[in-house]
Length: 56
Length: 406
Image (cartoon, rainbow over all chains, first blue to last red; front, side, top):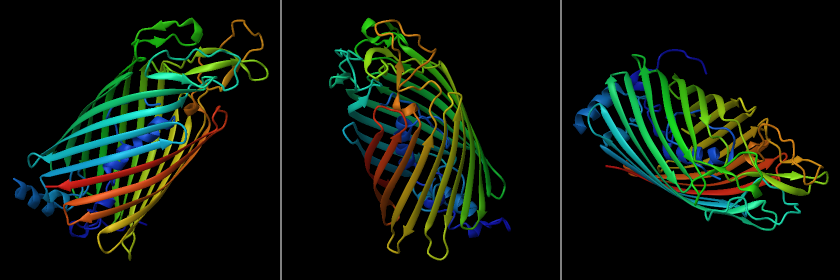
C-alpha cells in the first residue's frame, strides 16, 4: 500500500462513496461515542464538541 | 442553486470536504436521518434513545444542520459500595431519581430523561478551506451541559490531503435530583454533608490529517488533547470502609481530583477491496490521562456489499484500560467505629477499574433507490473488571436508522 502517484479527480469514484468517509455513518458514530463514553474511562479521538452527560 | 452546487461539486469531485459525503448525497438539498437505539444491560441499566438530524445545503457555500436527542434511562447501577455489609443501609442519594435497592446498597435504581440539541453550521471560505461551527446543550434531571466548537478543514489543491484543527469548550453543571446539591467529597454518607452545584469547564483540541493513499484506500490520523477543571466527582457514587474480612462497617462519598488532562492518538483506515468492492474499516486509539488511565481500542468492521444495494457488516471492538490511580473497590480499616485515615482521592466507580471489553456486532443496511437507506444493527458488549464488586457487565444494543434525502 504505497503512495505511487496522486489519484486523479476522475479516479475518485470509490473514494467518494459513503463507506470511504470518516466517519462512515455519523449517526452510528454518535451513538457509539455516547455508549462508550458512559461505560469506559476513555473518551475522544475523532472530533470535538457536542456536549456531555451524567450517564450512569 | 441546487443544480449549480451539484455541477460545482461534481466538477471538482470534492472528497474530503465535510458535508459532501457522497456523490449521491450532494444531489440533494436536504438530508434527514433518524435513529432509535435500545441499550440494555443484564439486570442493570436500560436506555431508549431517539435521535433525529436534518441537514440543509442552504447555499453553495453553507450547510446548516440540527440534531435533536431524547434519552430515557432507567434501571440499577452500582453505587460503589460492597455487597457484604453490617450496615442498615439508608440510601446513598435520598433523591427520587436514584434510590438504593437491596440490603447492601451495592446497586441503586435510577430513572432519568435527557434532551439534547446541537446546531451545526459549515461555511466554505475557499475552494479548499471550510470551517464547521457547532453549539450544543444537554439537559437531564441532574446535569446540564453547554458546548461550542469550531473545526477548520484545509485541503491541498488536489484534495488528496486534508488537515483538520478543532477546538471545543464545554461547561457542565452537576447536581443531585431534588436537592440541586453535591455531597462533600470523602465525608460519611450518614452525616449528609452537602455543598452547592458542581461546575466543570472542559477544553478539547484535535489536530488531524486525512490522506488519500490510493484509489481504494484513505487514512486518517488524529491527535487529541483535553483539559477539564472543576467538579469531576460523581455525586451519587460512594465507597465502603471495610474490616479485614471485607465486611462494610461505614460508607463514604467518593472524591476525585478537580482536574484531568487527556491525550489521544487515533488512526483510521478505510479500504475498498478489488475485486469484490467490500469495505475494510480499521481503527485504533491510544488514550492516556493524568489519572493514570491508559487504554487501547481496536475496532474492525468488514462490509460485504451485495449487488442489490444492500450490505452486511460484522464488527468487532476490543478495549482494555488500566485503573485510575485513586480507584479502590473499598477502603480497609480495622479500627471499626473510628475515623479512617483516607487518601486525598478515592473512588470505587467500576468504570475507573482495570477493564477489558469486547463488542461483537452485525449491521445490515439497504438502500432504497439513491435517496433513502435503512440500517439495523445488533451488538453484544462484554466488560470484565479486575477489582470491582460486580466483575462483569453485559449489554445488548439494538439500533435502527432511516435516512432520507430530498
